[in-house]
Length: 231
Image (cartoon, rainbow, N blue to C red):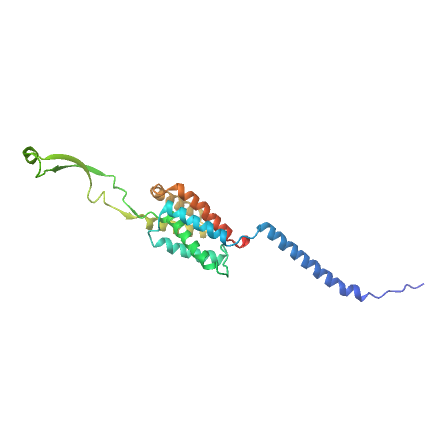
């Protein structure tokens, strides 16, 4: 008894690619929904702008204004690289340029913290006593005849007034640290980073850290909320 071979049904053959395509679309939608849940709820531009303005106020109270052109120069460089690498989301609406300007000003204050040493007088504490007379034409005849003497402290010429630009030294060490980190030369980068920290200690003591700490926290929050995953 011979068996009858049934021909394949054309309907099942045509339906399989459609089912597979539908499954792929559902999987893509599921992955997109999971990514959105991981990124959290969308954040508008008003919140990072408010945090950035608050950071500027705290930075001005704790650090003052930038005093060297190196600080806006490095800020502009980091800003361009940050937008190119996607650290900040380049918005296409009317909030774009206010946020760009805000990020630039925050970075200027950030670099003042790193390379804001200014002019340093390391030996201004070296002084010697000096005797000065204060003869006056007024008063009694005794005061005019016998001048009074006082002892004051005066700096040593050529020693106490010796100075150098600490900002340039900090900039060289910062560049060396970044170059060492870029080429993954960790011993060199660690050594230059420690040197940068040591030479910056006198500068750190001049800042008002009651305002610097809130500045760092608010600036970090403003940068985080402008990341592409948070928008």
